[in-house]
Length: 143
Image 1 (cartoon, rainbow, N blue to C red):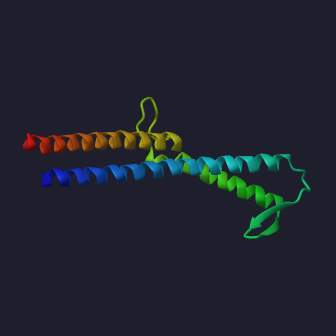
Image 2 (image 1 turned 45 degrees about the vertical axis):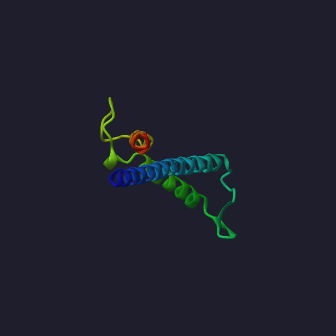
Image 3 (image 1 turned 90 degrees about the vertical axis):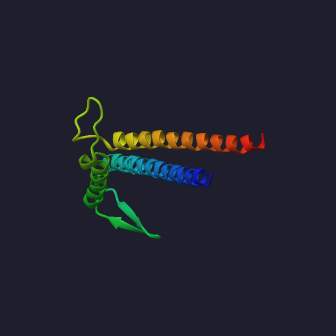
C-alpha cells in the first residue's frame, strides 16, 4: 500500500509537471504570434504615413521623436527576429511529408503541445487506475 502511495505521488507530480510544460508552450506560441501581429500592424501604419510625418517612440513615460528610417529598421529587425524564432531549424521535427530542416515554430510548438497532451493523458489514466486499485484494496479487507 505504501508503494502504491509513493507511485501515486510520483505520477501526480509528473502530471503536474506536464501541465506546467503545456502551459509554457502555449504561452510561448501566443506571445510570439502576438508580437508578430503587433509589429506587422506597425509596419502597415508606416507604409501609409507621409514621408514627412513625425514618428515617436514611447520610452518609459516619455515620447521621443524618432527618425523614420530608424523606426522602420527597428520594426523590420523585430519582425526578422520573430520570424527567425518562429522558423528555428535547429529544433526541426520530423513531420510526415515535411523536410526536417524548415519546420515552422507553429508546427514545432503544436507538435510539442500534442506530445505533452498525449503524455499527460497517459499519466492521468495511470493515476486514475492506481486510485481505483487502491480503493478496491481498501474495500476488500472490509468484506
